[in-house]
Length: 208
Picture 1: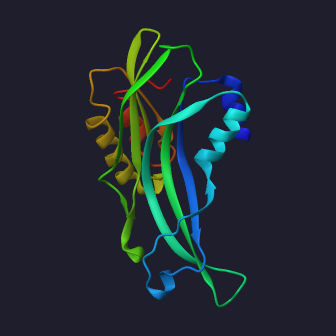
Picture 2: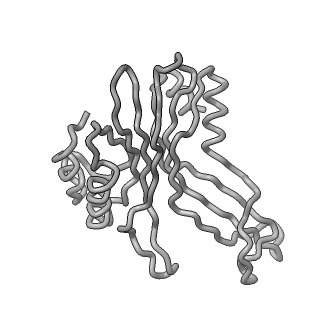
Picture 3: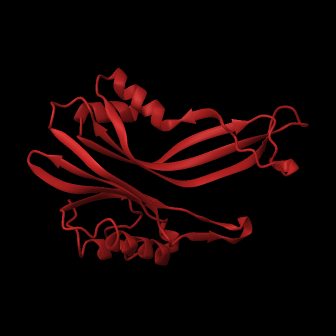
């Protein structure tokens, strides 16, 4: 609700969101018994909650690009000690665009999304943490540009984070269009966190 109020107060044409969670459950769960049925009972859908709150404020957005990152399911105890639930967390990054503007004011096209090849490994779980990006081409006020939303790895894995930034530059940002890059980049602008990603990106981008 607070985020919807902030967006409604400024009414940006585009909104980039990271860590947009979808939480689902299954009771009783089957993971502890070796089952593979995914949990599908929606408990919290943060994208739907935000869009509904925006509508209540009289501003209307739709998701125009989505990337799925982490999708993990784990068992969880319930009040009944003989029953375990399965809880599934799916993490998305999302671009929203306004749909209540005059015709032709804002046009989006060419939605893209992808996960980085560079990823932080979790050997104990036999997996790695997927991070990703999504993008759209935007035409507004007579200008066209590419709008990229990215979520890079935490600063504790600086080499992986930098490799993901290189993938951004070589991938969706490698275009003849002007580019606006936003996101959760996890790199301190003053170089206080041991990462070089901010310096790397600002060789190509101007920090607004």
